[in-house]
Image 1 (spheres, rainbow, N blue to C red):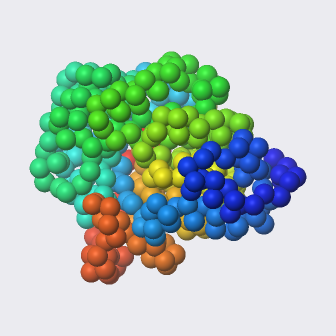
Image 2: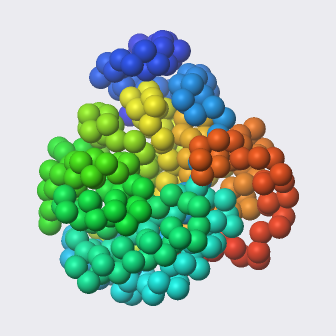
Length: 360
């Protein structure tokens, strides 16, 4: 994409966002098409918005792939889909004691939210009942929020999740409505919107984002962010495609660190008050510029993703501290200094690793 021809006042875009207005589509295109030398000015403006709503806090989430593979959907980016030949672990829903062990690890890593993900279009009643039992067990032992990512859900299922103690449900839109047919044919974009609506109706916090780098156009990136704004989604995971061998999108690896940062800035301008989480692919695409992403986003996953490994937890803690940010406690306040002092040197060996990985 050629650099945007007209110079934009990035601080003006921050003012528009802070004023509750929507930046124009022309300005949104300008954010995505800006020259690389503009990135620090863009991040400065995005950070004004981020700081207004989130201060210098970084929220941590921990992701558990509680059921892997064996999915009947044909999502072209996913290693767990029916059309994937990727070499991944495939297993039914984990036993409750294994989930509890993962929850303990998440608590040790100072995660405020424990995210349970299962593969598949929608859970069977037997699987769903076991998920509810496990949620109650985790809630009884650990002071963390629980996010469930279970596929397509209806009103009854979301109400039962709320009654069991689930705090939020993740269901990503993944891409713009216009581009959805190019990445999946076994369900509709509207099916995903309907699930998010069911989550809202149940009084649960909505978590929905997308995957960037799928081959979408700049308009698709903008439309995705605008769809999330229209749905008033609370938490927005921003994934960058990990091109996994064995998937149809295995050769799509075109994002640069600067492109990823511009996309994060755009999401902050269009979704000013939302929790924006740098999710799957940050290590692959942002690489050494990962700390800069925190000037637009206020949240990351700690540990691994669904079927791909994440960065070592010790490295994440050092990155957050070195950039001048502080961890957020589960109640949303800055974590007490004594809770984080020495954390990078006192984690159990290899505590950052599990067999799980892309985000919900």
